[in-house]
Amino acid sequence: MDFFDSHCHLDPMRFGAELPDVLARARAAGVTRMTVIGTRAADSEAAAELAGREPGVVAAAGIHPNDVAEAEPGEWDRIERLAVSGRVAAVGETGLDWYRTTAPPELQREFFDRHLRLAQRLSLPVVIHTRESIRDTLDMLREAIARGPLQPVLHAFTGTADEADEAVELGCHLGFAGMVTFRSSAALREVAKGVPLDRLLIETDSPFLAPEPLRGKRNEPANVVHTARCLALARDESLDAFAAATTANARRVFSC
Image (cartoon, rainbow, N blue to C red; front, side, top):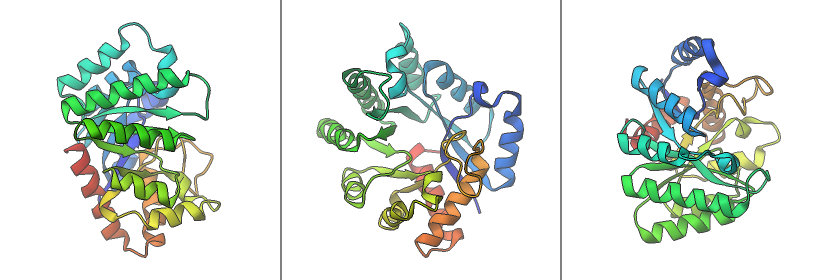
């Protein structure tokens, strides 16, 4: 079986000299592909560098909504240059976060719109963070899609069944992370059961959101297998078929 971790953060700041071992453990677990996500210009550039030297790794470049107030002069230009260079497979991580108050809502909206327009201009998928902001996120996506084609990925999805249905109707792929494995997440597993198989992605969000039975520990791409196993069981699908489908979905989204 081949697994695709569609969203992980593997920059040197988080893993340092351990990164070769992290990648080796992922491949030993069958995680042959992964999308390494940027949250600022520096780690986006590091992700692109990693993708350039490691087989099966692709990168995304963006500024996280919680960080937009701290963006330095010229930082957005660096994101644009990376995206235009062809060294990244997606734009993001971008989006809206109403849970934290580190960046003003209007500034988050401005940067989200910048990312959406850049993704549309370059025909790249856009990786989206939404926390306590799903309604506003879907509304901005609907406005963007009225301008032209867009390939949105809602990462670490935790919305309701109705919100999932609306996202699918808008053309989104939905990524499920370690939270779906938690004993307290029966409702989220029910939501995942209703998502069409061709719109499902699996992810770790490493080093965050470790799944059961590793909850509370530092996460890494090898652990996406636990999330895949949990979702396959919830959906009454074989792990082989589920892994093949979600890997095919991610390869299609990220063109790799």
